[in-house]
Length: 119
Image 1 (cartoon, rainbow, N blue to C red):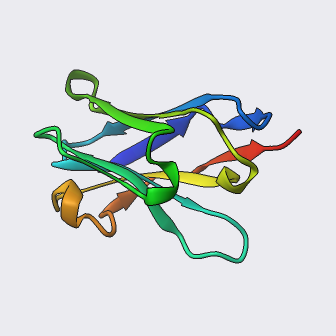
Image 2 (cartoon, rainbow, N blue to C red):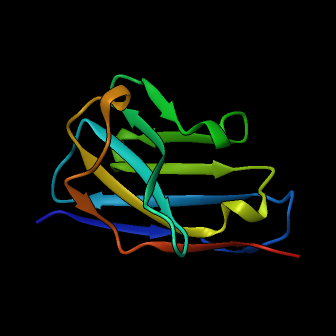
């Protein structure tokens, strides 16, 4: 059985940084990714990374967020810098087989971790 456990969310001031972590158990997948959802909005892909190293980011986080993976730990991380109030959302870890370029939804999901950017 596949389980994804996220950690690292919290409250941060605008301009601050947070690092999200997600550990997957049960099996490995080609692509690990982060989505987010804020009230009244659809869930959107934030960043994805395939086993070969290719990545995909939503335009609004390019240059501020960095996705990395540790294959030995079957983990994915999201380093979030220069955070803005509009980054406030629940962030979900997900995994799947499509490569990052074509990744639109995952096969398994974590429970989500809240990120709040506010002064």
